[in-house]
Image 1: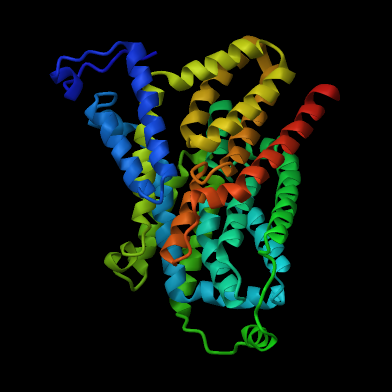
Image 2: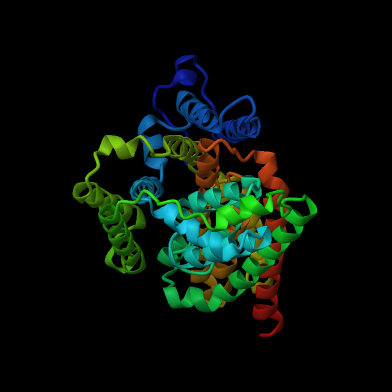
Length: 449
């Protein structure tokens, strides 16, 4: 556990000096209070809640401002910021309107087809891109399609979120926890395809199927659109306002960005740096000013993550994650089967309520030490961590980056996704898909070996 911070802060100036144990309790209390405010979104905006929590962490001296700044994962922030700008240029070029119109014809106006087509596309894209990029691309298209069909956007946008997280589980580049695991454990793209992708595929299909059942039960697959309105929607030949040159520029930069995502890690290029660089280059060649683009950046999302990183950073600094991970290690010992279940389900549960990036960093360090002691036989625990951390992101609205990004897009368009509304769909899907994936993984690596 880290030593208490010795810098001057409000508590020390009042003559209050807390022990290490008391600092740990304070960090947990501030996290719980912040999370409670996020839950009370009707009264407190989640970005305000996260920033208040971050301020409290610094005021009480759990972290100095410099330490708080260092606790922010700027790879994630740069990735979000860069991809938001690229997607904004694509939007200005008319690309999303064009894709939405063609996708609408493909669905034939049937709600179930809308659900399955867009969910499968989202999962596929998320496997080979990062899932935040995918939802930035897919959410506006889905929003346009469902509104034209007279459907409620919320469940369809939630389906996009769930599919992005399950699809992103499949590969090294699909979800941030996998990137961390690949880096710490030295695992490559092919190893993820072999050891994780099959279970992620099953989880994806099961998740969409369960989402279908939930939406049908709640009437979300019923459309009251008239036959004439449907005909007009499917045969709409109104000229689209597009900018072909801008579209080509944006798609070209987008393609280069995706290519660099695939090959950048071995070259020492993090996804956030790639996105920041290519989006800046796009601003250079496009006939748009930064002011025009920055007006469309989801600043509330970026600030929410920055505040939450600071609050979670306080937990990490006082050793909460290390204590949890160490306790798991003591229970696991050298039993791979127990390790798969404990690491997998604990990771899923914790990742549903704490951003999975700092937890994965802490747990990956513990698994590396465990593997040093027990050798290659502990390899399955890396894949259990991947499945748990990624699929657990569907448990709540703040479980993964993609969830927050889509939520803010929906709120901006006047169709907010509430915390409770998300859990009505996301929680059962997360519980069942995680259980299926980890169960199959457990059977494969214990009972069959």
